[in-house]
Image 1 (cartoon, helix red, strand yellow):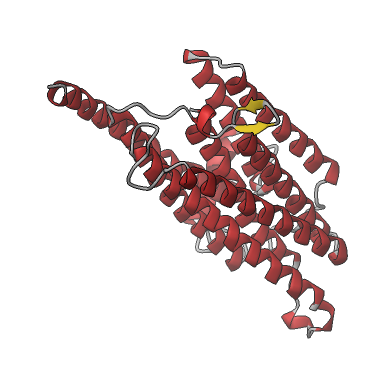
Image 2: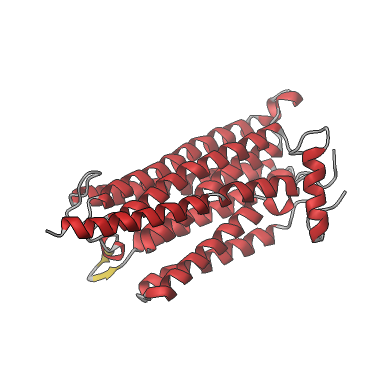
Length: 109
Length: 227
């Protein structure tokens, strides 16, 4: 077996690393809760919510799920496949906007 | 072989092409771990379908979408705090992810007793999460929210809420059962024949599932509750 295969064949990272990530997740969750509590609106709100969400997601995937220690063949497959979903999100958003417009036009009277 | 952490940009692509083109297994992982990743990748698509449908119906509806900060508020004494129960659920799930990560770490250090204890703690936290979700469901059902109607505005709100949180809650419940079975097997581990013993790998695979459940909640929390 190759020596750089996953976390199994290396010395496991110190527990303090997990505690730090845990603390970071706590702080980020508090921040995203504060966004709602302080009633921030508009682009600021969506920008903050999305960035805190992505930061938390990447911390969980890279450290807790050990992806940081995996080989690039796995990392690439895990990133590439869900990335295709962005096109589905864009298509559905465009179509939903169109339907909404039609409903406003034809349901109004 | 290039190592993951200090590889420059060109050796990243070199490593990917070597792994995929060589006459060998592409993913140099145990079959169990590979299959768990494949399952999770499939689950990514299931949850994306639910969340993207939620986006669609929320954009298309002409009725007013209920304000989640008010719908999910909790009144303590005289003060009403928005989203309090959801915030507590979020912190509980993050904590359970933390205990699970440390359980995997102890399993790799061969400290199975500690690992088993932390797995049980994780299952307990997961169970309390499901309990709070049941509380939230009964509160909304009591207020008249149904999968097909909603007295507070857009009827699609009910459908999205019950489907998305229900499917996530099902994952948490299955995860709790998974973790309890794992802890039971670990406690019998020393009495097993060496070839039947669980390795740290089995704990890591269970950890992957549990962290994924936490990961999905990160998206649900942001997109459904905060949006």
